[in-house]
Image 1 (tube, rainbow, N blue to C red):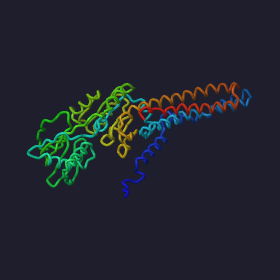
Image 2: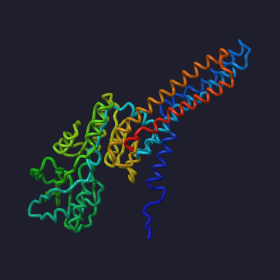
Image 3: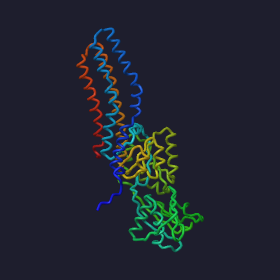
Image 4: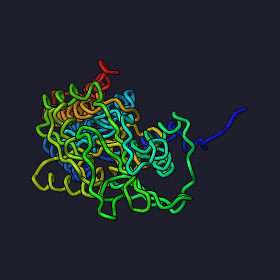
Length: 414
Protein backbone atom coordinates (compact mmCIF):
# COMPACT_ATOMS: atom_id res chain seq x y z
CA UNK A 1 0.00 0.00 0.00
CA UNK A 2 1.34 3.42 -0.97
CA UNK A 3 0.15 6.56 0.78
CA UNK A 4 0.67 9.86 -1.06
CA UNK A 5 1.28 12.71 1.37
CA UNK A 6 2.18 15.52 -1.06
CA UNK A 7 1.71 16.36 -4.70
CA UNK A 8 4.77 16.15 -6.95
CA UNK A 9 4.85 19.91 -7.40
CA UNK A 10 5.24 20.32 -3.62
CA UNK A 11 8.17 17.90 -3.29
CA UNK A 12 11.62 19.03 -2.17
CA UNK A 13 13.06 18.08 -5.57
CA UNK A 14 10.62 20.36 -7.38
CA UNK A 15 11.40 23.18 -4.96
CA UNK A 16 15.11 22.78 -5.67
CA UNK A 17 14.42 22.91 -9.40
CA UNK A 18 12.35 26.08 -8.96
CA UNK A 19 15.07 27.73 -6.87
CA UNK A 20 17.73 27.00 -9.49
CA UNK A 21 15.49 28.31 -12.29
CA UNK A 22 14.78 31.45 -10.27
CA UNK A 23 18.50 32.04 -9.68
CA UNK A 24 19.37 31.58 -13.35
CA UNK A 25 16.89 34.29 -14.41
CA UNK A 26 18.08 36.85 -11.84
CA UNK A 27 20.94 39.26 -12.47
CA UNK A 28 23.75 40.66 -10.38
CA UNK A 29 24.53 44.40 -10.31
CA UNK A 30 27.57 43.68 -12.53
CA UNK A 31 25.32 42.07 -15.15
CA UNK A 32 22.89 44.98 -14.99
CA UNK A 33 25.81 47.40 -15.44
CA UNK A 34 26.89 45.58 -18.61
CA UNK A 35 23.30 45.67 -19.92
CA UNK A 36 23.19 49.39 -19.24
CA UNK A 37 26.18 50.26 -21.41
CA UNK A 38 25.85 47.57 -24.09
CA UNK A 39 23.68 49.86 -26.21
CA UNK A 40 26.64 52.26 -26.55
CA UNK A 41 29.16 49.54 -27.34
CA UNK A 42 28.08 48.49 -30.84
CA UNK A 43 27.78 52.04 -32.30
CA UNK A 44 31.20 52.89 -30.86
CA UNK A 45 32.89 49.84 -32.41
CA UNK A 46 31.20 50.46 -35.79
CA UNK A 47 32.40 54.04 -35.69
CA UNK A 48 36.00 52.99 -34.92
CA UNK A 49 35.98 50.37 -37.68
CA UNK A 50 34.54 52.95 -40.09
CA UNK A 51 37.28 55.44 -39.22
CA UNK A 52 40.02 52.83 -39.80
CA UNK A 53 38.42 51.80 -43.11
CA UNK A 54 38.14 55.45 -44.19
CA UNK A 55 41.81 56.24 -43.59
CA UNK A 56 43.39 52.90 -44.59
CA UNK A 57 40.98 51.64 -47.27
CA UNK A 58 41.78 48.16 -45.90
CA UNK A 59 38.60 46.13 -45.48
CA UNK A 60 40.49 43.30 -43.72
CA UNK A 61 41.45 45.59 -40.86
CA UNK A 62 37.86 46.71 -40.36
CA UNK A 63 36.59 43.10 -40.44
CA UNK A 64 39.25 42.00 -37.93
CA UNK A 65 38.24 44.85 -35.61
CA UNK A 66 34.57 43.85 -35.79
CA UNK A 67 35.38 40.21 -35.03
CA UNK A 68 37.70 41.01 -32.14
CA UNK A 69 35.27 43.55 -30.66
CA UNK A 70 32.39 41.08 -30.52
CA UNK A 71 31.54 41.29 -26.78
CA UNK A 72 31.08 37.55 -26.17
CA UNK A 73 33.69 37.44 -23.41
CA UNK A 74 32.15 40.43 -21.63
CA UNK A 75 28.69 38.92 -21.81
CA UNK A 76 29.99 35.54 -20.63
CA UNK A 77 31.99 36.92 -17.70
CA UNK A 78 29.19 36.94 -15.13
CA UNK A 79 26.80 34.17 -16.29
CA UNK A 80 29.50 31.50 -16.61
CA UNK A 81 30.84 32.26 -13.13
CA UNK A 82 27.38 32.28 -11.61
CA UNK A 83 26.27 29.03 -13.25
CA UNK A 84 29.44 27.33 -11.97
CA UNK A 85 28.82 28.77 -8.50
CA UNK A 86 25.22 27.57 -8.50
CA UNK A 87 26.45 24.10 -9.41
CA UNK A 88 29.02 24.08 -6.60
CA UNK A 89 26.40 25.30 -4.12
CA UNK A 90 23.74 22.80 -5.22
CA UNK A 91 26.23 19.95 -4.72
CA UNK A 92 26.34 20.86 -1.03
CA UNK A 93 22.61 21.40 -0.67
CA UNK A 94 22.82 25.19 -0.84
CA UNK A 95 20.14 26.78 -3.02
CA UNK A 96 20.64 30.40 -4.08
CA UNK A 97 17.31 32.07 -4.86
CA UNK A 98 18.87 35.23 -6.27
CA UNK A 99 22.38 35.51 -7.67
CA UNK A 100 22.42 39.12 -6.42
CA UNK A 101 22.57 37.59 -2.93
CA UNK A 102 25.96 36.10 -3.77
CA UNK A 103 27.31 39.51 -4.66
CA UNK A 104 25.99 40.91 -1.36
CA UNK A 105 27.40 37.93 0.57
CA UNK A 106 30.88 38.77 -0.71
CA UNK A 107 30.68 42.08 1.22
CA UNK A 108 29.20 40.74 4.48
CA UNK A 109 31.11 41.71 7.63
CA UNK A 110 28.49 40.85 10.27
CA UNK A 111 26.58 37.60 10.80
CA UNK A 112 23.51 37.37 13.04
CA UNK A 113 22.58 33.86 14.19
CA UNK A 114 19.42 32.52 15.70
CA UNK A 115 20.14 30.16 18.60
CA UNK A 116 17.69 27.26 18.79
CA UNK A 117 18.05 24.91 15.85
CA UNK A 118 20.82 26.99 14.28
CA UNK A 119 23.76 27.14 16.69
CA UNK A 120 22.24 24.52 18.96
CA UNK A 121 20.84 21.14 17.99
CA UNK A 122 17.25 22.21 18.57
CA UNK A 123 16.60 18.79 20.08
CA UNK A 124 15.65 19.88 23.55
CA UNK A 125 15.38 17.34 26.35
CA UNK A 126 13.03 17.67 29.30
CA UNK A 127 15.27 17.63 32.35
CA UNK A 128 12.91 18.50 35.19
CA UNK A 129 9.23 18.94 35.99
CA UNK A 130 8.47 21.22 38.93
CA UNK A 131 4.86 21.22 40.11
CA UNK A 132 3.16 23.70 42.43
CA UNK A 133 0.12 23.42 44.72
CA UNK A 134 0.00 19.64 44.80
CA UNK A 135 -0.27 19.08 41.04
CA UNK A 136 1.46 15.84 40.09
CA UNK A 137 4.25 15.82 37.51
CA UNK A 138 2.18 13.63 35.19
CA UNK A 139 -0.79 15.99 35.39
CA UNK A 140 1.46 18.99 34.73
CA UNK A 141 3.06 17.32 31.71
CA UNK A 142 -0.35 16.25 30.40
CA UNK A 143 -1.91 19.72 30.41
CA UNK A 144 1.25 21.34 29.01
CA UNK A 145 1.56 18.80 26.18
CA UNK A 146 -2.18 19.09 25.43
CA UNK A 147 -1.56 22.74 24.56
CA UNK A 148 1.92 22.43 23.04
CA UNK A 149 0.81 19.76 20.56
CA UNK A 150 -0.66 22.56 18.45
CA UNK A 151 2.71 24.28 17.99
CA UNK A 152 5.68 23.46 15.74
CA UNK A 153 8.24 25.19 17.98
CA UNK A 154 11.19 22.96 19.06
CA UNK A 155 10.26 23.47 22.73
CA UNK A 156 6.71 22.32 22.06
CA UNK A 157 7.93 19.27 20.15
CA UNK A 158 10.21 18.30 23.04
CA UNK A 159 7.37 18.52 25.58
CA UNK A 160 4.94 16.54 23.42
CA UNK A 161 7.64 13.97 22.67
CA UNK A 162 8.29 13.45 26.36
CA UNK A 163 4.56 13.02 26.99
CA UNK A 164 4.36 10.34 24.31
CA UNK A 165 7.45 8.64 25.74
CA UNK A 166 5.76 8.43 29.14
CA UNK A 167 2.45 7.32 27.61
CA UNK A 168 0.66 10.36 28.98
CA UNK A 169 -2.81 10.85 27.49
CA UNK A 170 -3.32 14.24 25.87
CA UNK A 171 -6.53 16.24 25.88
CA UNK A 172 -8.12 18.16 23.04
CA UNK A 173 -7.82 21.92 23.26
CA UNK A 174 -9.92 24.60 21.61
CA UNK A 175 -9.56 28.35 21.10
CA UNK A 176 -5.80 27.98 20.61
CA UNK A 177 -3.86 31.24 20.76
CA UNK A 178 -0.14 31.37 20.02
CA UNK A 179 1.98 34.48 20.45
CA UNK A 180 5.51 34.11 19.00
CA UNK A 181 8.13 34.60 21.67
CA UNK A 182 5.63 34.23 24.52
CA UNK A 183 3.73 30.93 24.37
CA UNK A 184 0.41 29.25 23.79
CA UNK A 185 -2.97 29.36 25.40
CA UNK A 186 -5.97 27.09 24.91
CA UNK A 187 -9.11 25.81 26.53
CA UNK A 188 -9.28 22.28 27.92
CA UNK A 189 -12.20 20.58 29.68
CA UNK A 190 -10.76 21.67 33.03
CA UNK A 191 -10.22 25.31 32.11
CA UNK A 192 -7.85 27.65 30.26
CA UNK A 193 -4.23 26.48 30.18
CA UNK A 194 -1.27 28.69 29.29
CA UNK A 195 2.28 27.55 28.58
CA UNK A 196 5.31 29.73 27.90
CA UNK A 197 6.95 32.75 29.51
CA UNK A 198 6.16 33.65 33.10
CA UNK A 199 4.57 36.98 32.15
CA UNK A 200 2.40 35.17 29.58
CA UNK A 201 1.11 32.62 32.11
CA UNK A 202 0.86 34.49 35.38
CA UNK A 203 -1.84 37.11 34.96
CA UNK A 204 -2.60 36.93 38.68
CA UNK A 205 0.86 38.29 39.51
CA UNK A 206 2.24 35.14 41.10
CA UNK A 207 6.00 35.50 41.49
CA UNK A 208 8.21 33.08 39.56
CA UNK A 209 10.02 30.58 41.79
CA UNK A 210 13.77 30.24 41.40
CA UNK A 211 14.83 28.08 38.44
CA UNK A 212 18.00 26.65 36.98
CA UNK A 213 19.59 29.61 35.18
CA UNK A 214 21.15 27.43 32.47
CA UNK A 215 17.91 25.67 31.46
CA UNK A 216 15.04 26.95 29.37
CA UNK A 217 11.88 27.14 31.46
CA UNK A 218 8.32 26.77 30.23
CA UNK A 219 5.79 27.94 32.80
CA UNK A 220 2.35 26.37 32.94
CA UNK A 221 -0.74 28.09 34.31
CA UNK A 222 -4.32 26.91 34.86
CA UNK A 223 -6.91 29.68 34.74
CA UNK A 224 -4.08 32.26 35.06
CA UNK A 225 -2.64 30.61 38.18
CA UNK A 226 0.81 29.03 38.01
CA UNK A 227 0.77 25.28 38.54
CA UNK A 228 4.39 24.49 37.69
CA UNK A 229 7.19 24.62 35.16
CA UNK A 230 9.02 22.39 32.71
CA UNK A 231 12.78 22.75 32.31
CA UNK A 232 14.50 21.83 29.07
CA UNK A 233 18.11 21.80 27.98
CA UNK A 234 19.68 22.13 24.56
CA UNK A 235 23.24 21.52 23.42
CA UNK A 236 25.55 23.42 21.11
CA UNK A 237 26.11 21.74 17.76
CA UNK A 238 29.51 19.99 17.78
CA UNK A 239 30.83 21.94 14.78
CA UNK A 240 29.48 25.34 15.86
CA UNK A 241 32.66 26.62 17.63
CA UNK A 242 34.87 25.64 14.69
CA UNK A 243 32.48 27.22 12.19
CA UNK A 244 32.43 30.53 14.08
CA UNK A 245 36.23 30.51 14.26
CA UNK A 246 36.36 29.93 10.51
CA UNK A 247 34.02 32.86 9.93
CA UNK A 248 36.21 35.14 12.02
CA UNK A 249 39.31 34.04 10.14
CA UNK A 250 37.65 35.26 6.95
CA UNK A 251 36.12 38.67 6.38
CA UNK A 252 33.53 38.43 9.18
CA UNK A 253 34.42 40.86 11.96
CA UNK A 254 31.27 40.69 14.10
CA UNK A 255 29.09 37.71 15.09
CA UNK A 256 25.91 38.15 17.13
CA UNK A 257 23.47 35.57 18.49
CA UNK A 258 19.87 36.75 18.86
CA UNK A 259 17.52 34.67 20.97
CA UNK A 260 14.32 34.91 22.91
CA UNK A 261 15.77 32.77 25.70
CA UNK A 262 16.55 34.18 29.12
CA UNK A 263 19.90 35.91 29.44
CA UNK A 264 21.65 33.26 31.61
CA UNK A 265 20.71 30.52 29.14
CA UNK A 266 21.80 32.59 26.15
CA UNK A 267 25.06 33.69 27.76
CA UNK A 268 26.01 30.11 28.58
CA UNK A 269 25.76 29.30 24.86
CA UNK A 270 27.46 32.54 23.87
CA UNK A 271 30.38 31.85 26.18
CA UNK A 272 30.79 28.39 24.70
CA UNK A 273 30.88 29.87 21.19
CA UNK A 274 32.71 33.11 21.95
CA UNK A 275 30.17 35.39 20.28
CA UNK A 276 28.17 38.45 21.30
CA UNK A 277 24.71 37.73 22.73
CA UNK A 278 21.43 39.60 22.75
CA UNK A 279 18.90 37.67 24.81
CA UNK A 280 15.18 37.91 25.53
CA UNK A 281 14.60 39.36 22.06
CA UNK A 282 11.12 38.71 20.70
CA UNK A 283 10.76 37.66 17.02
CA UNK A 284 9.40 41.04 15.97
CA UNK A 285 12.27 42.81 17.75
CA UNK A 286 14.93 40.72 16.02
CA UNK A 287 14.20 42.68 12.86
CA UNK A 288 14.85 45.91 14.76
CA UNK A 289 18.22 44.63 15.98
CA UNK A 290 19.22 43.68 12.43
CA UNK A 291 18.12 47.09 11.15
CA UNK A 292 20.24 48.83 13.81
CA UNK A 293 23.32 46.91 12.67
CA UNK A 294 22.71 47.95 9.07
CA UNK A 295 22.25 51.56 10.11
CA UNK A 296 25.73 51.36 11.66
CA UNK A 297 27.07 50.74 8.16
CA UNK A 298 27.47 46.98 8.49
CA UNK A 299 26.61 44.50 5.75
CA UNK A 300 24.56 41.94 7.65
CA UNK A 301 23.80 38.30 6.96
CA UNK A 302 21.04 36.70 9.05
CA UNK A 303 21.04 32.94 9.66
CA UNK A 304 17.95 31.25 11.08
CA UNK A 305 15.49 28.41 10.68
CA UNK A 306 13.05 30.59 8.76
CA UNK A 307 10.06 29.84 10.99
CA UNK A 308 10.12 32.42 13.79
CA UNK A 309 12.95 34.36 12.15
CA UNK A 310 11.18 35.47 8.97
CA UNK A 311 11.10 39.21 9.89
CA UNK A 312 14.81 39.21 10.79
CA UNK A 313 15.69 37.26 7.64
CA UNK A 314 13.84 39.80 5.53
CA UNK A 315 15.70 42.68 7.22
CA UNK A 316 19.22 41.43 6.45
CA UNK A 317 21.34 42.23 3.39
CA UNK A 318 21.67 38.46 2.98
CA UNK A 319 19.34 35.90 4.57
CA UNK A 320 20.22 32.23 5.00
CA UNK A 321 17.61 29.70 6.09
CA UNK A 322 18.93 26.42 7.51
CA UNK A 323 17.34 23.00 7.30
CA UNK A 324 14.70 24.25 4.88
CA UNK A 325 13.77 20.92 3.27
CA UNK A 326 10.00 20.81 3.55
CA UNK A 327 9.69 24.27 5.09
CA UNK A 328 7.75 26.71 2.93
CA UNK A 329 8.33 29.56 5.38
CA UNK A 330 12.11 29.13 5.21
CA UNK A 331 12.21 28.90 1.43
CA UNK A 332 10.12 32.04 0.94
CA UNK A 333 11.78 34.18 3.62
CA UNK A 334 15.46 33.70 2.72
CA UNK A 335 17.63 34.60 -0.26
CA UNK A 336 19.86 31.56 0.30
CA UNK A 337 18.37 28.25 1.40
CA UNK A 338 20.26 25.39 3.05
CA UNK A 339 18.48 22.11 2.54
CA UNK A 340 20.23 20.59 5.57
CA UNK A 341 21.37 21.57 9.07
CA UNK A 342 25.12 21.47 8.32
CA UNK A 343 26.69 24.58 9.83
CA UNK A 344 29.84 24.20 7.75
CA UNK A 345 27.78 25.35 4.75
CA UNK A 346 27.70 28.88 6.22
CA UNK A 347 31.45 29.66 5.75
CA UNK A 348 31.20 27.92 2.38
CA UNK A 349 28.54 30.42 1.26
CA UNK A 350 30.77 33.40 2.05
CA UNK A 351 33.87 31.78 0.57
CA UNK A 352 31.96 30.97 -2.62
CA UNK A 353 30.55 34.51 -2.79
CA UNK A 354 34.02 36.07 -2.52
CA UNK A 355 35.39 33.66 -5.13
CA UNK A 356 32.50 34.49 -7.48
CA UNK A 357 33.08 38.23 -7.11
CA UNK A 358 36.80 37.82 -7.75
CA UNK A 359 36.25 35.53 -10.75
CA UNK A 360 33.76 37.93 -12.37
CA UNK A 361 36.25 40.75 -11.81
CA UNK A 362 39.01 38.65 -13.39
CA UNK A 363 36.82 37.82 -16.39
CA UNK A 364 35.79 41.43 -16.98
CA UNK A 365 39.34 42.80 -16.65
CA UNK A 366 40.67 40.13 -19.01
CA UNK A 367 37.86 40.73 -21.52
CA UNK A 368 38.30 44.50 -21.63
CA UNK A 369 42.11 44.36 -21.87
CA UNK A 370 41.97 41.56 -24.44
CA UNK A 371 39.59 43.51 -26.66
CA UNK A 372 41.51 46.79 -26.34
CA UNK A 373 44.90 45.24 -27.15
CA UNK A 374 43.68 43.10 -30.05
CA UNK A 375 41.52 45.92 -31.34
CA UNK A 376 44.62 48.11 -31.61
CA UNK A 377 46.56 45.31 -33.31
CA UNK A 378 43.70 44.73 -35.74
CA UNK A 379 43.57 48.42 -36.59
CA UNK A 380 47.31 48.37 -37.33
CA UNK A 381 46.90 45.42 -39.69
CA UNK A 382 48.80 42.93 -37.51
CA UNK A 383 45.84 40.53 -37.23
CA UNK A 384 44.11 39.03 -40.24
CA UNK A 385 40.37 38.23 -40.12
CA UNK A 386 40.94 34.46 -39.88
CA UNK A 387 43.35 34.90 -36.97
CA UNK A 388 40.86 37.30 -35.35
CA UNK A 389 38.19 34.57 -35.41
CA UNK A 390 40.57 32.08 -33.77
CA UNK A 391 41.68 34.55 -31.09
CA UNK A 392 38.08 35.53 -30.37
CA UNK A 393 37.11 31.88 -29.86
CA UNK A 394 40.11 31.28 -27.62
CA UNK A 395 39.16 34.23 -25.42
CA UNK A 396 35.67 32.80 -24.90
CA UNK A 397 37.14 29.40 -24.02
CA UNK A 398 39.42 31.05 -21.46
CA UNK A 399 36.46 32.77 -19.78
CA UNK A 400 34.50 29.52 -19.60
CA UNK A 401 37.40 27.55 -18.12
CA UNK A 402 38.29 30.31 -15.66
CA UNK A 403 34.70 30.35 -14.39
CA UNK A 404 34.54 26.55 -14.28
CA UNK A 405 37.19 26.57 -11.55
CA UNK A 406 34.40 27.63 -9.17
CA UNK A 407 32.94 24.13 -9.45
CA UNK A 408 35.76 22.93 -7.20
CA UNK A 409 34.88 25.29 -4.35
CA UNK A 410 33.70 23.23 -1.40
CA UNK A 411 35.14 19.93 -2.61
CA UNK A 412 36.73 19.29 0.79
CA UNK A 413 33.40 19.39 2.61
CA UNK A 414 31.23 17.84 -0.11
